[in-house]
Each structure stands twice: as structure tokens, then as C-alpha cells.
Length: 264
Image 1: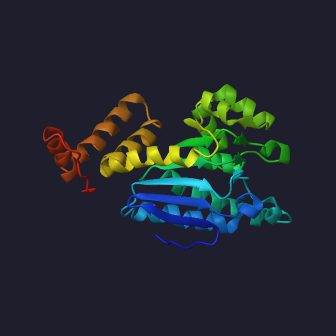
Image 2: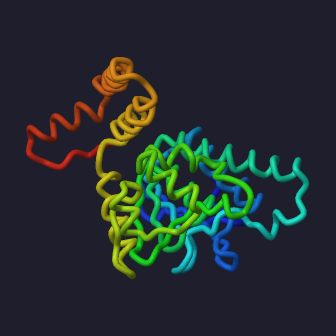
């Protein structure tokens, strides 16, 4: 995994915890082509080899905006081919984010509009500061959500609520996002990262192979009927039985001590 990017910051802030920051604060951390390429490289590298990373926290630079969506100034004057080429990069980055073997938590430090809101939805779960606002305003610009919004949002908040949000294009609050099931926790200003890092550390302390298998089982199982999903679950479960971490976990329980998981 590269540690230096043009539009994002990637830093191992603790032995197993990676902090990723969308870093274009001068334009509200809006997504341009380079950010699409940078995030695609980052997420793809985690798929290829997560190494010591057990959890990722994704946030935005600054205190007011998580991500304003696509950079419309860069898009001004684009041809259809240029627009679609850029969007394909965004799509590939989204897919790589979804396929990350380690959990990715969105720490929504401010407004998340358009593609920024879709990025939050693509993460495994999200915490948001109380002052954050969310919106999918694409229909007010002559387009529609195209980075997963029409698929992720109904799965999070239900079909009828998603239709209201997407077809009106109106923003909604962090409290509404939590009450509808899109956000897991709302933090007071100044407390967001403390709250997110607390749950991230808990995840990092658990068995990493178990975390990856459980995440995979949840994600793919939801795309199947219940019988196939149960079969998929037990296949994922059985891969953990003959691991050092499983043996360590049971031994530590019986010895009444904290387990030391190695990811093996």
C-alpha cells in the first residue's frame, strides 16, 4: 500500500488501524479524477494484501465537509466520453471499497452530499457528527445518483424513504440519518473521532480472520435467499476452525486471559 497520494492521506495511526482522509478541503473534499484514482489504488491494495490493517476509518479534511460529491468545476465542459470515463473510475473505486476485506468505518465530520453520501453508504457502517447534513441532490442537476445511491440507500432506509430522499433531492440531518438506519451513531462536535476510534479499536482487538469472514458472510449473504446464505455462512465459518487464532481464542478463554490474535 502506498502511503503518499495527491488527494488523500493514508496513515497507520495505531498498529492495526488505518486512517484515510479525503484531502481536498479547499473544494469541500470534492471528488475529482485524481481522487478517484487515488482511492481506487488504496482500496485495491487492501484487497490484494491488507497486511497488518484490521480496520479503516475514512473521514474528510476539515471540520465542515466530509465530501461534497463530484467536482462539478472539473466536470464543466467535459464531453460525454470524458464524463463517463471519469465516472467509471469512481465506480471501480466504489467496488474496491466494498470489496475491502477489512471493515471501513465512515467518520462523517461534516456534510456528505451526492457522491460523498454514496461513499458513506458504501462503507460498512458510519458515525456522524451532529452538525453533518446528508443529501443526494443529483436530480436537481439533471442527473441521478450513479455511484450506488439508488441501491445502497433503499437497503439502509427502506424503499419509500429512499424514494423521498432521492426524488426530492432535499438534505437531511444526522439525527434523521440515524433514526432511518443509515448512520449508526451521532456524536457531539469534537467527539466524533473519539467515538469512532473506540469502536475501531474494539474491532482491531478481535480476531482479524474472523472479522473478514463475518464481513464477507454478511455482505454476500444479503444477496442470496436464506438457504443459500446459511450455506455460505457455514462455509465461511468452517474456514476458521483450523486456524491459530481459533485455537488461541479458546485457550485464552479457558485460561481467563486476553487472547493475542495473529491473523493466522
